[in-house]
Image (tube, rainbow, N blue to C red):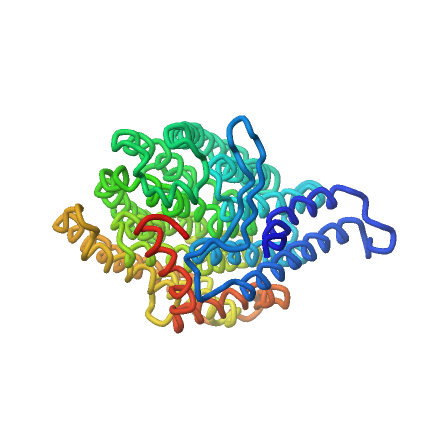
Length: 517
């Protein structure tokens, strides 16, 4: 199992190197470009299969224990180690990353975004996958930071070289925000490692902050939390996200929303909650306040974009919705309770599935109509997807109601558990304050439902296609293949939440009680 996890993390890197080499004569197919795109599908497919094997071999009776571990000395002078492992917290995110990377590679094989060489595109996609997988598997603070930073460069180039209008400015904004946040985060990680005498995340979690003074914990949470908050993104550090999503190609938006945003919230759970609990308790009310502010702000921004005459871009609207949804994740973490943290982890996975699907669908609508501008799509009677492309319209409506948190779909459980956690926060936190945060968050769910239903009304409804109008294509075969797993998992997670909560709850209980076994 330990070799399997190493292969999962390192495999995409080897695949990226191989993508830059000339294809063997017998594997070129119709063209070298087709060969390298097929190579991306094969590599990500193999990694996904390996991740599924890892799930099957995982000891589900002991999800709080680190499994498939590798611990090898790397930089002896600093006691930095290549320490990898998975538990019930990281395993779902590892599989989500492998799944979305494969679906993006499959989608790109048939619908490659306009831009330079496919070789570079596939190589960057694989480096991005490797960095994200390593982030969720790393158990050394320095290794975690390096993996965390690895994803920035490939995402920058995916936006800058294969994005749409305004891509260069959006890419620069993305890289500057995240790099500045990372510098501060590195200082916090070094402070923890130096003061505790180790960078090992398992040892630090087991110590549960006893080796760090309260003042050190407060400084560490402020520094590390700032870097994580930028990546999440937390209001008001979110302003890079709408521009990045609007300019990014479809698969870039899917990976950005589906897995990159999860790295920030995962860092709060994996690093700050167990390593600096006293510091987290100091900042928890402020984190919750910023979280609910993000929920309301994201919803109001979406309502402004969706109104007639607002000149709203559908991709930009989904980006702002992510600010609100990640607010629920941060609220659950701020409660510092098993209920709230489990809700945060569930909402993380649900957001990856549902918002990944939404960005795929918005990309399809933009491909058919040549624009994602809501006023243009609405026109006199709406884009009327129900009448022009009924399957595409039905799927967009499904993704919208899943995103608004309809009971029975994945989006419901995470938000509900985060609000329940705020109803009874951890000892030492102000219950009246968290009850206020819970009420504001609950109001945010109503605003979320309002703007998503308006999106469905404006884009999906309207009259049938007028005679003589050029028809648009309904869901194509490759789109069906790329989107079906996300639909199925959204329904499965909604109807059977115990599949995910059974993994996360024992690990969260152990983490909050004093580390991982």
